[in-house]
Image (cartoon, rainbow, N blue to C red; front, side, top):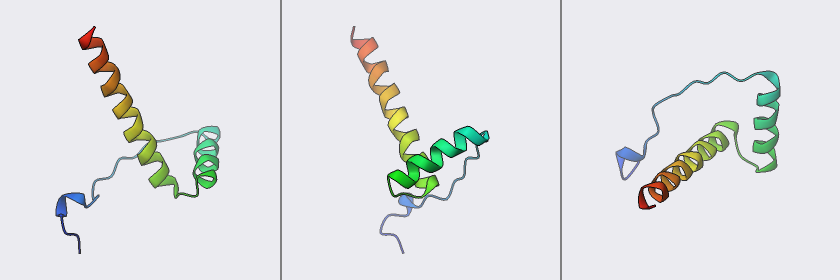
Length: 61
């Protein structure tokens, strides 16, 4: 099915949100025309990338 089996996303992470947080996620996902899980995954990976970039900048200073 996949040319590279490492691309299969088969691991699950569960988070708990309150009603307001969930409403924000749902609204942003809908605005970006994405499923909630896809949207949250992209936000998570962007945050990780931003943290890595900040860490590299601190090490260079």
